[in-house]
Amino acid sequence: MPPLNAPTPGARGWSRRAVLLATLAVPAAWALPPRALQFPRDFGSHSGLRTEWWYITGHANSAAREFGFQLTFFRSRIDATQAMHSAFAAKQLIFAHAAITDLEGRKLWHDQRIAREGFGVASVSEADTDIRLRDWSLQRDGAGYAARLPATGFAIDLRFASTQPVLLQGSAGLSRKGPEPEQASYYYSEPQLAASGSLTVQGRRFEVLGRAWLDHEWSEALMHPEAVGWDWIGMNLFDGSALTAFRLRRRDGSALWHGGSLRTADGRLQVFGPEALRFEAQAHWTSPRTRAAYPTRWRIETPAGAFTVRALLDDQELDGQGSTGTVYWEGLSELLDASGKPVGRGYLELTGYAQPLRL
Image (tube, rainbow, N blue to C red; front, side, top):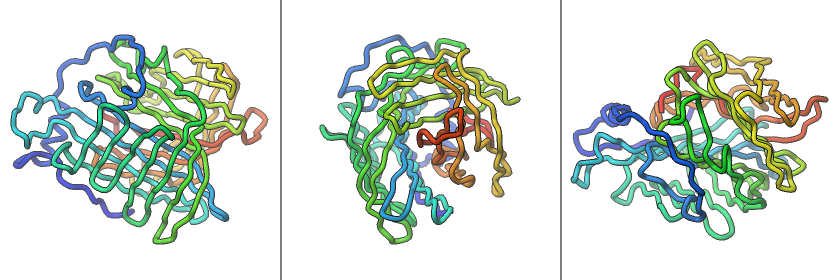
């Protein structure tokens, strides 16, 4: 695993542990009101809410090699410092994860960053997507997004051009994540992004083309007290459709909540209710590092049909304990229809298997 390269985030005298504990010392959450998302404003940050992330996953090919890639920027508001007047108070933390899956080399490369917002080290714009964390950045302009993340042992330098309209998840962008109304997020996706640029692994640069998926979510409270993690897929189908499916999971493995959608290439949207999905694990991989057993092959039944999701590399476990404090599995996977025919590619994310997830 690449060595961690993350600066201590807090104000002078704040340890990383103290800063992370402060993010847990939060008041009771409240239900998010329905609202019409407005763009480009909602491409930007929402610092008044506690948790937010911009998440891009995808697959790309060079002349002779295939890769998966992932980059995520997180923003976390620290409630305990909001009333402080000092410029050194850590009011917002910015985290980032990046990874490349090298299918030919059968290896996952990943790295992470963390810093408090301000002082030219980390910044997030509220006007549009413009996030900077030291030498990592994600920015949006009229043509799409540009991501530049030079990391330890690898680098991501990609552009993402929009080919379809924004996909509002849930009910017009308000996505329920549990049985209580406060467990919800504002959530949109941009599937079928056209990816181009370069991926670098161990000093070797590959010019690549591919497809990507962007999720942007922000919330005050996402997790029900009984939830320990989630299972999620975002799949770009080869016919231009986009499939989202997720479930939040209790400690005993039972489903607490389901959600998702299918949008066809011609724009027809079908939103899946909490009773409309079924996830069935079919194969597991056990991490030699954490001993966590991750379901890396699934059968997922949706109102739009049954699918199989199969990881293209078992070992895609990411250790984010130096930034977000979590270990999770996230990796390039393929989507097969009921007959076993490959119909898409995208990412599978599995959280809460190494330890319960806390947001």
